[in-house]
Amino acid sequence: MTSAQEKPPAPDPVLREDRLNFTPTARSVSFSRRRTARLVREWGHPGLAGDAALLVSELATNALLHGAIRGRLLRVHLTLSATALRIAVSDPRGERLPGLREAAGDECYGRGLLIVARIADRWGVEPRTVGKTVFAELALRQGPDMPMGPREVRAGPSRTATPR
Image (cartoon, rainbow, N blue to C red):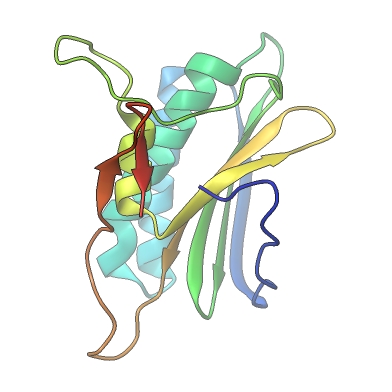
């Protein structure tokens, strides 16, 4: 996760972009997942469509469960640059920040951000005037020497998983 002290890299110019607001319902999560997969394929990256759909599903579900306020919308924002696909989900609850944790074996919830950390090349949280944005980025790997696949996740000393 990007710490508050790290300066984010300068963004690449945006090649493609999609931004849509959703009502905070379970139906919106499945719609945003299908929409993301379709757009990523149309934007020329069919190999990333499944990972992008999973990431938007996890981020939108977290926003629905932990960031929704009645009468306020959630926003899914996709941007494609020459080097990365960025998936960002914004919600109105800025005081409720996400964090990695290990879920017990019998828990039904609590693994979403571990999935995000495992699949994404970079992820983090950005404050907004009202609310927050949680984002995940998938690097666009080019060439045979670029590593493919998820990054390693290891258990940290405080029993929370941290991406390497």
